[in-house]
Amino acid sequence: MQFRHLRYFAKIVEAGSFSRAAALIHIAQPALSKQIAELEDEFGVTLLHRSARGVTPTVAGEVLYQEALKLIRQVDDLPAIVRSSQGDVQGVVSFGMASTMAPALTGKMLEICRNTLPKVTLRFVTGDSLTLRDKVASRAIDLAIVFEDNQESGFTREVLFRQRLYLASPKGAPRAKSMTLQEIGKLPLVLPSPSNVLRRLLDRVFAERHIVVEPIAESDLFDVMLSAVETGLGHAILPKGDFSDVAGHQDIATTPIEPPVYLTACLITSQDAPLTQAALAIEASLLTFIRGQLEETSFKGAEWVDPGHP
Image (cartoon, rainbow, N blue to C red; front, side):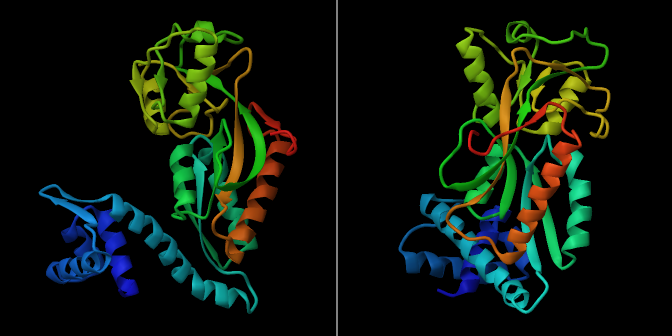
């Protein structure tokens, strides 16, 4: 087995087909298929399910894909690690952020990182917290700021703050100073999918109060939920109290939930792999930046958390 075999295999899984992967890698498709067949012969297992619609990894293929990603990242990081030992920190750092936080933070963070770490390239990924956590675990990204309800094992985390939940409503909807969960449960709601961190919290707090909620739609995509609210389809419950920084959705109104319900924002990294010097430098910059934003009350509904009592 040669290292390029792992790169080719990972690219096929990500592309979903041999033809698309061959075009991306700039290799003839028959040659690519031959190398994957050799890889399957060497492991003695089938790594890919092949069909007219493309390819998907088998159980063994998924294991190989996750392990291959770790090795590929390590090899790709080596040049920057060696050069960083000679002076300026440099390299590429992949960083994830929960979609609800991204509009308020990404621009300022990019500017700070560019000014303080000019030789570090920062790659941003946004998404729901569960997806970002999985990417950190697989080392597809180095670190991420996510929302958590219960702390999962396998991660090193820095607790940042706890964020209050708000009801997001379309412009012109009846407004109240606050709303209870009982009142919210009677509204048409657009909620995340059942596996989502926020949805699991909501399902639990509704169940504790014996409130039955049937959402009119479900989505883990932040923009989809906001569009549904904006068009008047329904309301959403989100860890964000101000949408003035979200282009196209500035008119969305927010109402605090009483009694308050919170998610905890954490900066997480994988316990299984140490961060590069570049990632450690970005981590330090992020922590300083986030704490500065909290002091300026940039997050409506955010509260400090004592690290000893998350």
